[in-house]
Image (cartoon, rainbow, N blue to C red):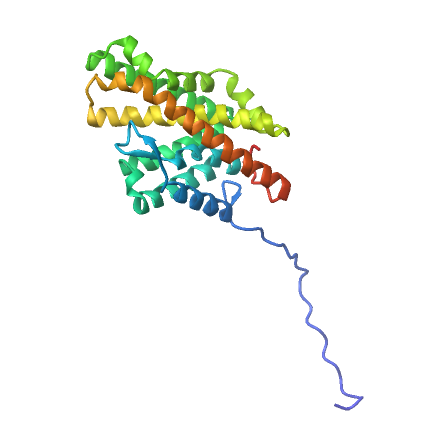
Amino acid sequence: MSADAEIPEAPVGAPRTVRLQGPASLGGAPVAYVVMMAAVIAVLSFIPFSVALAGGSSFPMSQGVYPLTGWLLGPWAGIVASAMGALVGVFLAPHTAGIAWITIGGAGLGAGIAGCIVAGGRRLAGLAASLAVAAACILFYRHAVHDNGVRPALFVAAYASHAVSVALFLLPTRRWIGRLIASPQLGRVWIGLFLGTWCATGIMMFTESLVSYYLLNWPGQLFVVFVGIIPFEQAARAAIGAVVGTGVIAGLRALSLIKPAGARY
């Protein structure tokens, strides 16, 4: 090209703004986090832990982790992660699945209830959940006592552990537990996760039992067995949630990973 050749002018257009897009998210939580927690739940679904009273088989260790997804990811992403993990568990670990649709729905419910156990905010969600929990208690009591003749004292004794869960959720203790989980002190986090998991899984199992009772209508003599078994199962779930959850939260805080918008840890 000769020195006298004309150099064409660069094209001129309207100025453009370049924005970097973040990762795909669900309810404010990265989809990768949701998939990861779903995988954890699916793996824990293989491990039987005790006698399930609503689903018809041994309950899986994953039940103690359902609420954790609600605190790590937020309520909506937690519901999806827990339900997805339980769905995979139904197919890959049928020995702990029980009634499939009850298992999957209960997993989502446990995460959703946990998502309402926070230090502040989510008042509308908490109110709606409180009304639903109160309605479930009334329906279960009426069906067992008035329709099937179960003695009121026996019904209360059988589900006393779940009654504690309901009380922790309906009373201001729900906010107090949320503050414990968000505390910088891991000892307080452990206590908060134990109580929060007890609360969320207790409501979850009570609701699953309500649905199963309408379907199976088990004899009243089984309520006597429940008096001794349900507290043990609840303590096991709460301990699993506290031990696993404290370790996970400690690791996430140390790594300083992106915190989902709905997370409360």
